[in-house]
Length: 388
Image (cartoon, helix red, strand yellow):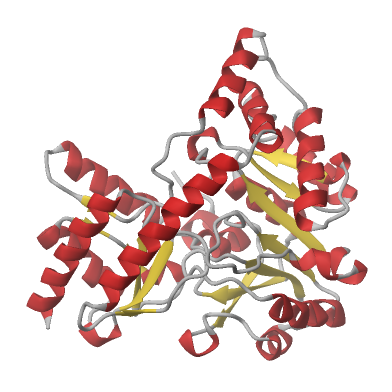
């Protein structure tokens, strides 16, 4: 069997592979501390589950519109208007099978052979592969701790060519947890407008920010940048709805219609009754979001303090999301070597930084219980003492 050439250019997800290995070790009876998956350990809030159950009882189990239930698209548009200062209407929104699917459909609708997509590194591991699958060329722009792992306006401007079509922005970021300030976003917006390119702002972690940090959408900074901005978001992180697979993308109506056509020929509509749970998530009290955010904040504090006390490792304080991006450069190991040895010798699962374009780093998720964090940091300390 000869497979399509495009599949040979992409790699399986390392995050999913390592999470699966950790689960397999647990199934064999091993005491594994897993910091691999980007998934809140909280249950989905009860009122959201009740709304989905009610929809089931009411027979909302049939095919629905490919672009999403009208009431959900309206609720998302209101959320974008109220929370983000973005003047979208329901027809500017498509509901997708998770935030990842919104980005995949976007690339299928927008990118073709010869197009370049600018992606700052470290990046979420699926960004470059989506570009490749769409036939485009990922242009990776390296950042480091000296700029807080943020792309600068000069870097963005220098990376643009006549073939540049899209700039991928992720704030708060996976894997670094960085959040761009309003001034930094304004400076990037100037370049986007100057170069007349599009920017997709991945805001899946927007609700998970700390210590008074302000998260804003780049599209809210003026009409010219709004016209060039696409918003990707979803319900997985803020509402602990990872398995529900509900995301969305907002943008010009022409693009949304095109994405809906693509979705109509691939997945069709998102699970109908699940969408009614998403409506309840947006239209009910947001106290559940705040409770989870406060728990993440406490875990972040403990994990960061423990981590920075371990000789040979260093980590900048993340302003958002629920990850630590740790520099392992002093060990002399590649990130794969480090993570394999850590998992085998100490049963601690971490994600190699090579997956995010930074082989001298690893990523740890603190979306887990405090006991696992304390135990895992003890094991990581023991591992480093033996290593150095």
